[in-house]
Length: 246
Image (cartoon, rainbow, N blue to C red; front, side, top):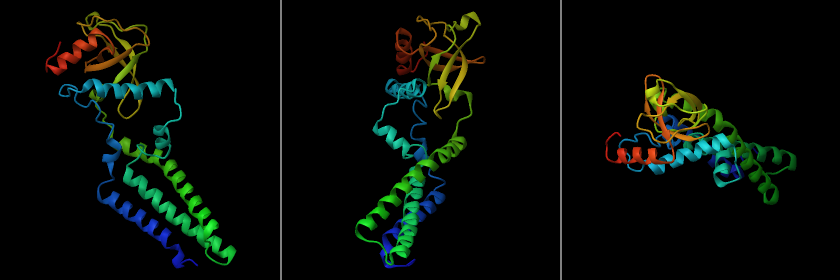
């Protein structure tokens, strides 16, 4: 029963998954699929759509820090592993697992029943193997995603420029005071880091604990930031659009 022609659909799935594995290897791992979000606000100086991009980063930051997660399509796709690992690799895992598990289930059921299952029993085998494939892809996507993130992560200090953070110290001093405060920032690899920060000398809006701030420049002792909503942000955004610094 191992090579019964009734198992053809599972053979096709297994072969398709194997071919996708070979394609992933041949294309260098398919990293492009997991880097779709990593270039958000990559070059704020040249991007006239910075406000929209920063809103997307801010939304990720709020979701990570506040943990107010309600069920959504995005949450379901995340559980399935979409966005956590290269899409080609995820499909290869799902298809090959579905084909292999379905094939083995068919053989086991055929041994118990005396013939390859069809009808309702065949449907149960198909559905059960599909569920196992999705669960396997979900379980493997997280460690695989971390591996790809570790290889592709920008280790430079400038990687935080353009990210949204939240003030964790009582307040942020001006750069003229030669003092620093602290903020928590979610970088593009979704790592929450605490960094030293201060306000630029032209800032008019104070930054208190809990305020959302935007990292705009790397300094020797930390980072320059501005309050995300208010006069300073509008001033900075206009300066970026005019290709000048305030």
